[in-house]
Length: 559
Image (cartoon, rainbow, N blue to C red; front, side):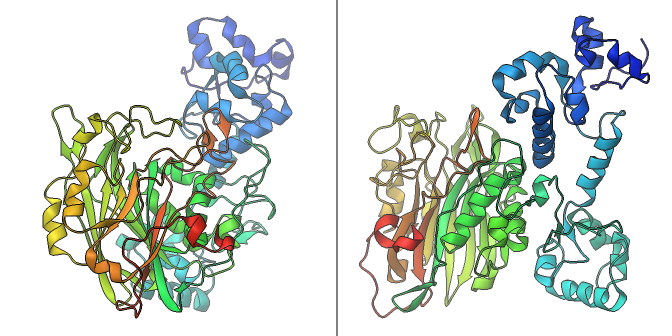
C-alpha cells in the first residue's frame, strides 16, 4: 500500500479521483482496518473543505469546527468534537470512525492552510516586545523593573526589535536570560499587522487560547463555536476601597476545581476568575486545587495585559498582579496531584515576604492523601504583617455536594468517611506562634465539624456560618454545603470590618462546558471574601464574630 499509517487523509492528486467516489473520503470506512486508520481525517489539521467530506458536515458546521479548534488550541480527544455547535453527540457517533486526533505538528502531511495557521498560532503566542509597556514586560518571568526600563530605552533609541535575539543587546540581558523568556515573548513580524491590538497582544481573527480577543467589541466570544450569546457580567460600580472612612483590603479564598493550564486557557474561565477579582475588589486570593503550577500565572497575565474585552474595558486600574505556587503538591484530587497558591495585586501595597509548605501532604497505604499539605505565606499588608495558611482538604468519597443533593453528608456537611481527611495536629504549633493569622481555604466540611476543634481551641473564629453554603452548580445555584471558610485569629478581630461574603454572581460563562451543554460554572466552589482595615488600630473595631451575607452587607450596585 506504501506510506506510513498516519492519522490523516491524503488529498487526491487527480481532481477526477474526488468525483469518482460518491462519498468522497468518507468511503474509506468500507475498507480494512488498516485503510480506515490511514484514511481517518485528523480534525486538528483538516481544512473546512476536508471536514465537509464527513457525513452531515456542511459549510457552517465545518466553520464552527475550525473556529472552535483554533480558540482552544486543538482538540485533545475525538469526543471534544461533540461540544462544537452543530455537531453534538448524535452526529459525532455517525462520524466517529472516520476521524482522529493528533497534535498539529505530528502529521507530516498538513494542508497548506493548516501549516499557515500553525505558524500564526506559534508566532503570536506571548507578549510583543515592540508594543509592550514597562508594566507588561515586568509580568514576564525573569524581567525585573530595571530590565524592563532598559528594553524600553533601547527600543526608543534604536527602533523596534527585528528578532528575539536582539534582546541580548539590551543591558542586563544575556543569553541565559533570553533562553528563560524566549517562549514568553515575540517580535511582531514585518507583514501587515492587525488593526486591533491589545497592549502587546496582536489580535487575530482566529484567536488562540493564550491571546484570546474579539473581532467585535460587543461580543466576548468568537463567531460560531458553542454559542453566539455574549457573556454578561454583574453591573457594578468599582468599590471605593474604604469602609466608614477608613482604607480596607479584601482577601479571599477560592478552590478552582482541578484547574489545569488547559482550563486556565479557557477564555470563559479566565473571564470569570479575573472579573470576579476586579468587581469585588479582591486584592489577595488564596487558591486551591491547581493541577498545573503554571495555571495560576495565566490569570496574572490576563489581569496585567487585558486580552479579554471585559478585562481590557474595566473602568479602574487593574493593578500589577503576581502569583506564587507551592513547590510540592498539597493534595490529591480525582485528576491527580494538586497544588495551592496565592495571587495578589502588588500595586495595592501587598508584598510577599516568604512562602513555604508547612507540612507535606501525608499519604496513607492506599496512596490517598489522608492529611492536607498546608501552604503558608507571610505578606506585608498595610501597616502589619499577615500570616496566611492555605488549606485544601479533599473529600474522601469525591462527592462535594455539587450534584444538588446532600447525599450522605450529615448536617455538618461531611460524612463519616471524610473524617479521615483532617487537619494535622502539627498545625497547632503555627496557631500558637502566630498572632495575625488567617487560616483559609477548602476545608471540605462545615465550621462545626469536630476535627476543626483545633482551630477553635486556639481562639480562631470562622467568618462563614455553617448555614451559609459555598458550593455552586448550574443545577443548584444556591449551593447545598458549607465547604470553604476563612478563620481569623483573635488578634485580627480588631482589624476585621465585620464584612464577609460568598460571591455567587458572575460564576458562569457561555464558553465554559456544562456536561454536553455550555454556560457552566468556572468552579464548583464560590469565592469567599473577608474585609480587613489597613490601619492596624481602628478607632471603632467592629463587633466580634459578626458574619453577614453579600446581599446584606454590600451596596446594591455591588451585588
